Image (cartoon, rainbow, N blue to C red; front, side, top):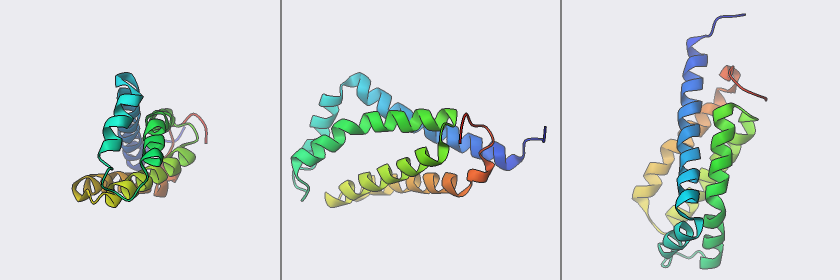
Length: 132
């Protein structure tokens, strides 16, 4: 067995941390009530050009998507697909955030996009995984 490289440890650390973060976003939103979360957040889009039914539908499904992506990242199950899905999720969230001109939140979403991109870029270091 070959020794574990520092890059493999670094990759695992970032993958686990981001996976926990995304999973807990979903889990806590599901636990506190998806309908409550979606309703509260939809109200924040009232002045945006996005149609409220579309926003509500997206926000209703978001916690489940977050939970699945986060768990897949945590256990290393189809990591590449989980990371690409996570990157697309962040892109969609950024689209909605910028549509309502919430630049402060958009700036918080950018590090998530960078982290997903770095993990995709470094997939060769994904040694600890259940399945590619």
